[in-house]
Length: 171
Image (cartoon, rainbow, N blue to C red; front, side):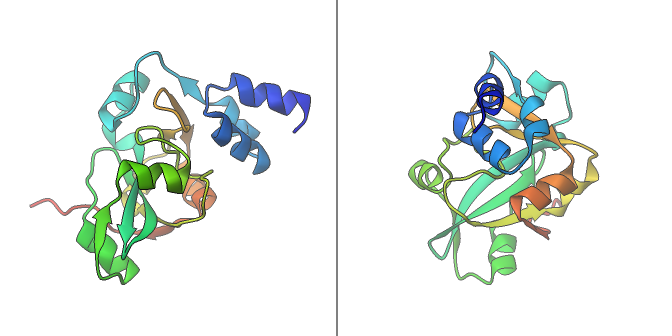
């Protein structure tokens, strides 16, 4: 990493591992758009309040276990994941929410700061189609106080996600 790139990474407000991943992928522009807040942006509601955007514009990065294998689901902040729909999309027998240890081991980040890409290990990624309803969404930058904006189609592409419908249906 060059001195300028190292300085960009250090001063971005993003988690150092995530900043490095952005630089390695040639995404310096995203790194420069990271915003850090004194208050936590750990939940979708906290992030939307800090940013001043709609709850649906927050991208949640959620880790599940499909037949014991970690999978990342990207979901808008106003919706909940339907694990049965995730199970069907993956052809799995059982899907459960991963515990904090699995989340950290898989991604390298703590719950509340998991970014949509730049993880420690490669996992299957599903992105709910509902994210595409927005021109811009905000995602965690590897830290519970840092977020960055990104166009949903770019998010899906950088995450290597498969677009699916896994949102809970409302009655």
